[in-house]
Length: 278
Image 1 (cartoon, rainbow, N blue to C red):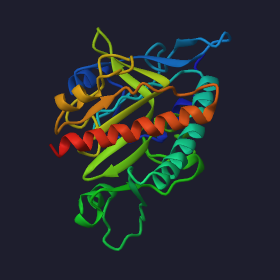
Image 2 (cartoon, one colour):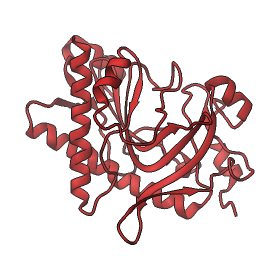
Image 3 (cartoon, rainbow, N blue to C red):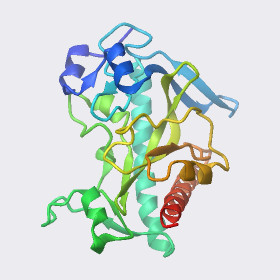
């Protein structure tokens, strides 16, 4: 049973969203696939559970692709599952955000972090600001708190809290590029369908506003890119790309997962920047 209020949800979306599968295929070259949740079973073993998705597995009015960004949005059709994912992501985003600042402040070899002031006198966007000489090698981040942590598909409001909250991420602006920590992992399967795994981490680097702006960048595997980061960067020099870091979304000790995510992300950014200067 689908338990979304379709009319209410659809009010929150703009004309740049489409649920037309033929149009999505024409624009991106791919179709929406399945949604999974990554986690642990009662025995403490890792498992990947497939969940029914709204509009893909069941009829409805799904919004599964943004025509401007070419980003996919695949939603579970269970409100209970959706709410659990929302809360989990929100908690982890804020912990990662706070620990990133702490980690950089305590490690001089990382980044000089600057919180973006939306009222800056030059009216620069964050990406514009990161290109300015005065902000070279400065990591620009948002001033964010609580449930508005991250960006994703716009601000949370009454009409789109459920759907838009699922795809919020943490953006970091550095030397004219955007580095993102995503709390869900997209991948393309052998049938050329885009699938999403909630509760898995994915990093990406984009030279533009959206990672898929110049074409779909999702990897063709959901598995971790173990010992493959250098090759990914070299193969995508000057291009947008996604990276599946070998880190856990959650662990028995929450702080260990948060620390690992931040440390791997710092390594990701630094390695990308090193290759860009060669």
